[in-house]
Image (tube, rainbow over all chains, first blue to last red; front, top):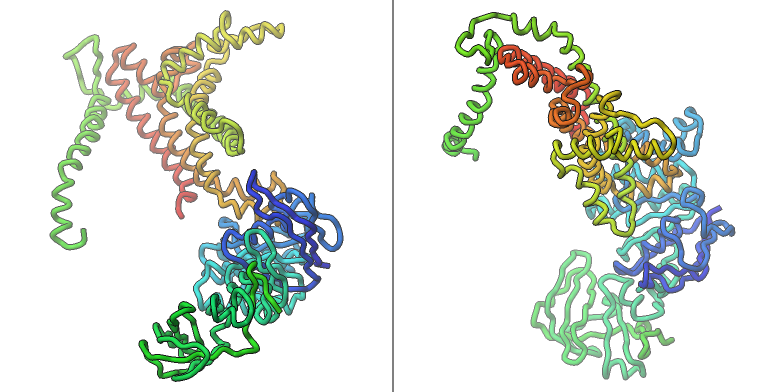
Length: 333
Length: 290
């Protein structure tokens, strides 16, 4: 239950080729995150899987069976929308019960399942309220409740946390991860936030302009990004890209070093520069160092460091963790 | 507008308009009430005498009065049903993506711009005329006896004409309401396994509730006083078959020159309209609250 396969899926809106061709395998019970900048086709891809859009060509297989032409309701998938899409005139109870009611389930059974779902999501006290009487996080949970009662073979999340404030987002992130461990169901999650992707995913699919750039576990992507795009997208603050002489020293077009893989020294070091803006986060300090021939480099220093803007500093990259990229932006081993 | 002085200045500024509007409303009402207690016939000017409630008892016991009330309500209810059901169907249709959508929408609204007298005349002479009307032609071409709409079913004919005029209004309001329905809600319902019919019942209809209320309230106000359509088609006849309250008051005042009786009728109409309004607000006004 719950494996999804995409075979050469292609989607065009009129003349615009949104998704040229994607092959992808989502294993049963996996938490897969589609991540990419806005407009990269990740939501479209999710909607193709959900059946809310028709694929132009190619096939969508759910549990090994061809579902390409199946209507959304027949695909055994549940979706949580960005706007939650709760039914405003129905109580929380009726919202959660709606899919079961549509499936023609007997009343007693519906009540039991709704009570169950409400229990799981701490919604029991709110069952008789209307969605507009709930906070953002509660609405989110109702939307999830509506998705879990049907016991679908997979859950689809379309940027579900983007309407929440930062603190709540961290909370809900945890709750969704816990829900995944509890239900052991396949989940596909779309986000533009690489932090969400890194923290939640078993497998990340990085998309750019409708193409899959790389598929892998969060740490795979972090340690060995396949190209410049993935290297720049995964990790925060983003990786420093250095071209020119410094890169030529490694025999490639571009080298990339993450801020956390550089050491900052008061003198010496491989590269020299002047400290610009420093950002103190308490646990870390990010220094923006201006160099003569490599532009500005972001360097992470643990804890508090005493460098002030205008100080001359040296930077030494961690030699094992320099990423090399060729002229096409592909990683070189 | 929050300090004492600004509030006082504000009251002073709006006072002239308030006084004007108040007089505008209260003077005619007061005069009508005053006339309704007089024996006041335009054929015998200068002979007005106080008659108490005689005008009222005369108007209320007029056999035409009861017919007029029933007809008034039939017109309101009939037109409301046609325009709301038809309006929802048309709105659903116009909401579909199709070629020439913009032009089509303008065409749909156009009956609303035709003045009632003209619309009624067009219907009377070009559609419902038993000899030369289009409907009669259609019936004849299928071998039926042509139906004389205005003579044998005058009230139905008027309901059809008025409904034709108000259908665009209902369609327009309902269409905008339909377009404000969150696309994701519709999709969520689709994912939840609701087919088109269930989506309509559980998602679309509740969403349209407020718009339907607005349509009912606004149309009721205007439909209680349908007049031009009756005047140019049936003149309230045959007999009193298509006389509504507004037409009855008109007949009393300007056909029988009985200003006193007509004023009494007018007051009765005002009271009735208020009863309907209270009834409506109780029944459906709740949907308007957020």
